[in-house]
Length: 190
Image 1 (cartoon, helix red, strand yellow):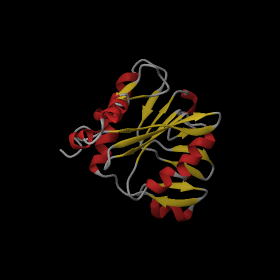
Image 2 (cartoon, one colour; image 1 turned 180 degrees about the vertical axis):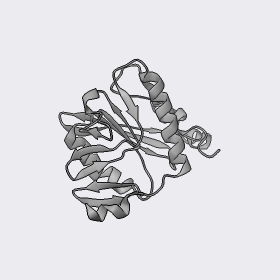
Image 3 (tube, helix red, strand yellow; image 1 turned 135 degrees about the horizontal axis):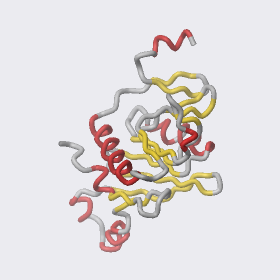
């Protein structure tokens, strides 16, 4: 524990006892996190589940993460300084320095510990990858895109019809928690 004192003022995660330093989030990253948190928090008012941003999730003695956003539906998992065990829903917002871990090690950990739904959001390319846990394994549910007008016009009629069906994402925890993709990426450049 003595070696961790040098990290006291810096954000880090731990992977099997190895310290992994986290870079500061970009402004588009923070805007997506704030918007999504507001949408979900408003929906969850008066419900059992609770949304958190960057809460520490303790999975095992030497493994913890700070996902960008998470939902916990079991209040007994919420401790004073961390979430103990798997949340029900996790969002990671990709950056060049985190994408590899988010798509591999962290995805595997979330799957192993039973996180029911896992979103990966790419702020630069404006898409959301949604995985859902089925029989203990993640299955790719869908990839949702926020198309520019030019990209939309480049799709043929059949592609446009298919993509129209994916203009909103339904969070599996609630039948009526539906988030328009455009709302996630609105005003990123401001």
